[in-house]
Length: 217
Image (tube, rainbow, N blue to C red):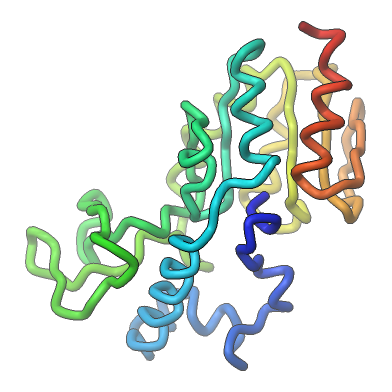
């Protein structure tokens, strides 16, 4: 979704970042083994985010709020949906501009600027870590995401390979017969019915989606 804003995805990086496997900078084990590298990885991504702006795809989804009740469930950790003006955004994998306690995940703080530093601690005295769901960790927001998908009248999937679980499994919670749209330049394997594929990037894909949904307004 954010690729056209200049944010590189794990798919783009081929699983590598500065010659490190992504799992080496995005797992609890990596944090315990080399917290300096993990901290630098997310600080660099956060710094990049401050240089990015929402793209046509983000803005197009905001436009849908004129005619539909729109709930966004995102795997992205950036805040470009919020910057564009979307009113309801649920982050499955955490938020890049926030930090949380290393001992109590309910203690979450906004980061002032792009840099999270060692020595910044939560109210319980533990080092703050990036507020990101790392590989191997539970995805608590799934409990909120599932009922949203179950109640949806239309499901739109944008810019995901549908290979990362548990998020990819959300398509299986839709009510039978509702229209499902998948926007992605590469056609993912979706073994469900009533799917319309739009093989475009997010910006163009959302524009074409508007044309498809005009008959439903």
